[in-house]
Image 1 (cartoon, rainbow, N blue to C red):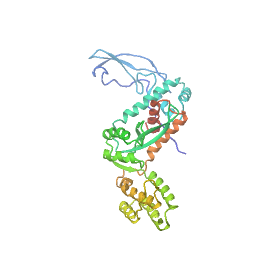
Image 2 (image 1 turned 90 degrees about the vertical axis):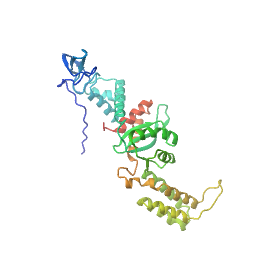
Image 3 (image 1 turned 45 degrees about the horizontal axis):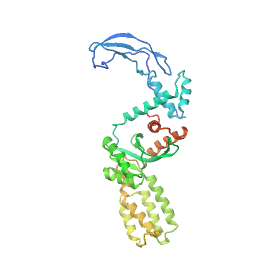
Image 4 (image 1 turned 120 degrees about the horizontal axis):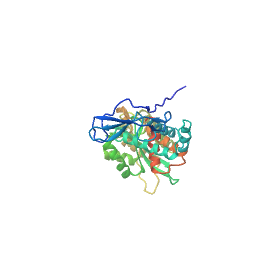
Length: 349
């Protein structure tokens, strides 16, 4: 049986050291100015004993709190525990009820503010963390007006942690570029992993980053197309379908050239614009598309830091959608952003 250990911040009742500098003037010489008793909300302590100090330089007094305590009436440990219980699936009022078992009385709005604070800390912490490989994927999540909202999610595929979320349709290349360009410049992104969408492919080319197409999505849509063509393509050309399937499984470096050679072997038959494409014309279109974008299918082969699928981004979206169902849809954009940062991170914070 596996055991999960969750480490919460430590809290001390008394401080064992002196402050290093004055919070007002950065002075380093102090005079102890008394001791106070501060009531706190915590799973273990009900009060702590911070000392007051007087700065010998600016003559102002300030409190020096023990570890895990600040000016708030909740300790760092309790605020982290609140966020953890919410991520594990409890509602705001459910968190309040669970904390009652520890003798802590907290209203649901205090829980909401703690979640907002933790989400802000995570966002600030990851604002400048370098990200070399970025996963992008679109999602449709139920929002405040009972409708599905189109979102674009960015995830660090190195650590599997959420980076940014935008109220953007992934099929709009201009909007995607406005969302992605600051991330590329600020975080140093050199590779993006996405679905096989033309809008995302064009944005990657304009931003000058490598583009790995998720192999799961490629094999899904190509496999579906091959099954449909198998019913209509003449038997004399069925062997090409098998060779395409073999090339996708092996992904050889020369695959693009081989696909182009197969494309040239199929005779071209011109039809009017209003007429549907024949099965052979559809096969020619498939071969040409795969040949042109073949390098985007195998970036992971020469760059070992790049995953061959976009599964980590899908996992973050999945946790976000699951939380949406438990709360019957997000009530605001701030709630949706908070859920993205907290549930997307799991318990890795």
